[in-house]
Image 1 (cartoon, each protein chain N blue to C red):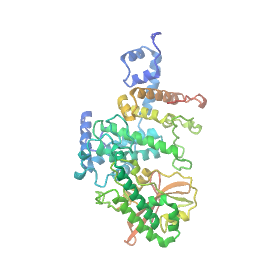
Image 2: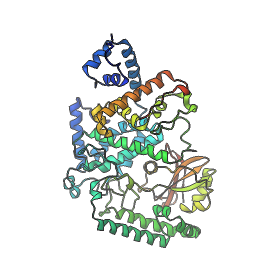
Image 3: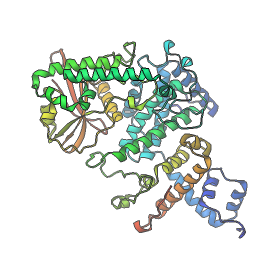
Image 4: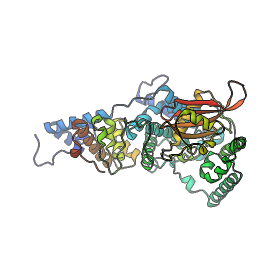
Length: 206
Length: 320
């Protein structure tokens, strides 16, 4: 991950070295290093959260909670996994938690949910809202996927994690990762490519 | 050409091949199969669409997010000489410890589970005693208020004259809130003291340690009516507002994010004393009360700010 400030490391190894140094400094109490770590990773965290939650408000909430969790969990980060993988774990968990919270609370009357977003599918998948069918976009297509499928696809296609890393982040076997990504992509390809009528839409089930 | 003896290539095969995770045999079969190549291209297009980064946050939002996270640093300001991570040992029980290959729930931690039962009981009893004392005195903090709505009603019924009592009680409990979770009570580098309502330090990384959710202040037709309701004290609005009771409570993270942004924007020294949310003209706003110095008199006062939940843009600000 490229630093958002300061000199940009030339190679991947240098990026990792710099990140390790920052993590160590932050763990030792260096507030500047900690802030830089947060700034380095906030964009990726937010991108993941934006794609998984499907709307700006929940993405911001999940991003904030993920960053807080990074701060609070950093003293116990032991370096056995890459820091970025650890951060993705936290971000993904924060997003899934946010989705669970959202399912538990009413959303009627939310002024900021002004129709630019769609509700995500429950794990059982839900029919697509006809109201937004004409504005089918990535968020809408992703929202039709069960959250676990969505996370796998986002971690692969947005974050470029390999299957082993995604398996580590989601705590599932690599074979399940492979299957979820394939089924998720197939659904998205059909939705984004063909935009069939509601009755023809495929239903993805876990 | 495809070999009829082989099973047809599946989307899983094609998808894995796109990711470089398929076997050489599968890759070779795809290369020889125009139909598979076409399907693969479709899947690749979907992957590319998902890989498009969403719009990034503006600098203000990033600053607020980072500031909100830094506020969660334990009161000892991270890991200091007195809190050496080596003392905790390399732990795999953190929010993302990978020692066992399991994504640990953020609120989980083995250390917590192994706390002596007598200590847990003592802490629970202590909190119960403090809570009952606060309820009895009618001076509960925001979090206590939410749990003891009934006792709050009697406190509110005292009207404006009780606002000073309420403020004093809040300050007191605010200090206790911090002191209950830190032994130092020292100022942090942001200049906030133990009396500021910042994140309680949490040694186990629990999200549940976030400040409690904001108080529901009710529904108002206009910002002016909200201002009128808040003119005397923060919590007195409940006696004046009409209640729909169906609005969604904002998350603690949303409340803290905008609170931090307001604090930074208005250059306030401490965090919000009170947090709430209300519906104004059908839109949800977050409401905060801060200690401030009056720009008119130069004397200590309270500043009330109401902001939109999503962008934290100001809807209403006034001094008491």
